Length: 206
Image (cartoon, rainbow, N blue to C red; front, side, top):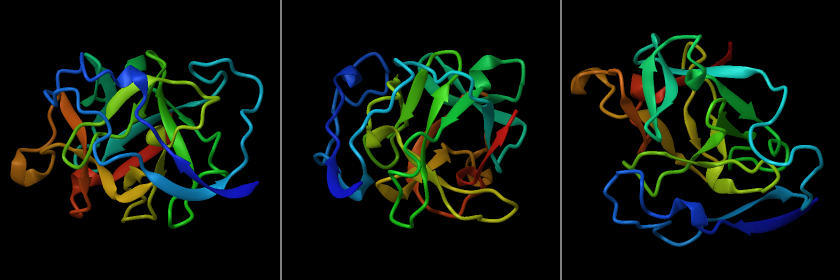
């Protein structure tokens, strides 16, 4: 295990098209992130790609609307009315790199993989932009799909933030009371910490 700087390059599959966000194909503005962490460069055996086998699924939901769950619809990460029978609302919290990659507070990283699509949630292109979905390769260390949970913000709700920029958090877009609250189809963006209920999350086993 050695102390290295790991650069993340934009992945080819981003492509800049098909997601309908209207960002004109901009990929990884601001250049690659450089982030220091302990990592040993070994892929580990077992899985050959896709959703890790035999891992328990989790539910992800926000304090702003506890009757909604994180889901996938039309290639986007959204909130939908909670339904445990809806497999799109089931996620695998893959902690394969949790001991190797940590955020600046020393908290362990994880990836969130959708049970149905096998896609993983990827960082957005910047603040106020939606998170993205890309195919998951569990044997490839890619910091742009790794997240950490903050310390408890109250009632065991936590922020979910980029491993290499903990100032950008999961945010249920306009999901706070002042902007009308969460609805079916609310998108998930990254936003600076504003202490809103729509920025506080729980990840619990089904």
